Length: 415
Length: 157
Image 1 (cartoon, each protein chain N blue to C red):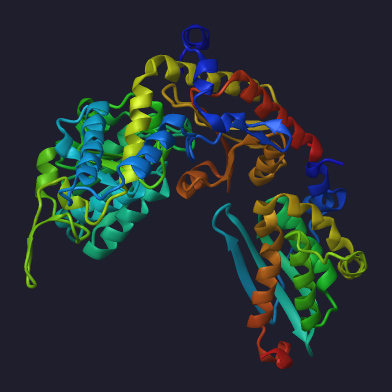
Image 2 (image 1 turned 90 degrees about the horizontal axis):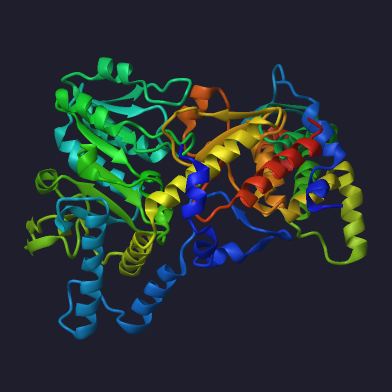
């Protein structure tokens, strides 16, 4: 966690807040305290504006037409590919595939990267803290190939057990699928070390960057992983668009997953040949407006002093951890030294769902439930947790509202 | 009274703390499992049906205060009711928690009277996301009654 005092002086949260109209909302008579960023981040005005310009001024399909608007749309769409490549330090725009989101990206990798490599007895390792979207696609491909999905345990602190990973890795290990950062306890996984361990046995490392993209400065080549995926909407962009990055030679060797227009070289009734990546993996008309919106979101983020913004949100996390520690009966999960601004907790005697409703009554938006991470709930022996997740537009007032809401829940329930 | 206090009325909090009929039946005529995959609430409801009358009902499982209290209060009102009465009661309950109670005062009073203590759940309508919590046990009990088979309710098959 960063130092809040340093960050607070170099981060103009007031100016940033003005870019997010949703923050002006009043919920149940109180100003909204939006602490559900890990579910979806709010969007700066620039995102809707860019999508609106596409609809109003150059609405056309991409990569097909010869007319002017189609060329403009194609340029705008492909420019986002360049922007994403630069943003995550890919080797080139041809390594960037647009998908419908993290889930779609992981399914594509399971079916196209993993499937041809898997046979009976092979293994896919997934960590115990994964989101269901980084578990179920691997189970599906395992069922189809006779491979097996195995669990990499996490420690009481919510960190990946690297020694266990070393023990699990063998020549049977084909894929190691891990989150860059946990969507529940916020732990940042040591991808470089995981990749080094997996690569020793020839395993490929797939990283779910759904929480990495919004909370970390992502350098896919620096991480040493083989594939990295994320969603637009958790990174301040629109829903319905995601990114899949994989090393060029891996993409080139991957067969198509979905067939259709746009992904072919030539088609005959009996057989077809396929376009090179990334087009090979973008069958059908893509989410053009959403891709353009994602480009606007990244352009907007590039206008920030991103490191200062992230240090600032880490400061809010530290503040929330400290404030909740003072409330008897609150238990926080995950104590990793390296974590993003996502905080999961329970309140003794009050079910997380009821805490969530009490917080809503205070205008505080949080997530309550299993966070699509049932194995992690099981690991910590609880059916559900409350999760507060921060963004650089949140403030100490939001932390105040969170603590107030928790106390309100306790008073309503008489605990 | 705030929306929150209206939701968590003392009767609901009491049933949450000390759920009634929180037990599995020995040899039930029917059982069913109900789950809300979004929040992890999971209950099993067992029913004993004799000559179309629910003679015993119990539940086990875990969930939030609203779902647990709803299950508990449901078991207290349903015992001794005919199967078709239980179905009708659920319909009324559903109307109240979804905020679709009859518009005219007289009809509304009639519904409240019919629901009795279940009216405590009217505050749920201000929190639409919680409707599923309030109705989970009811849906599960209906499933259990169906599984109890034709002898439970011959006229409804």
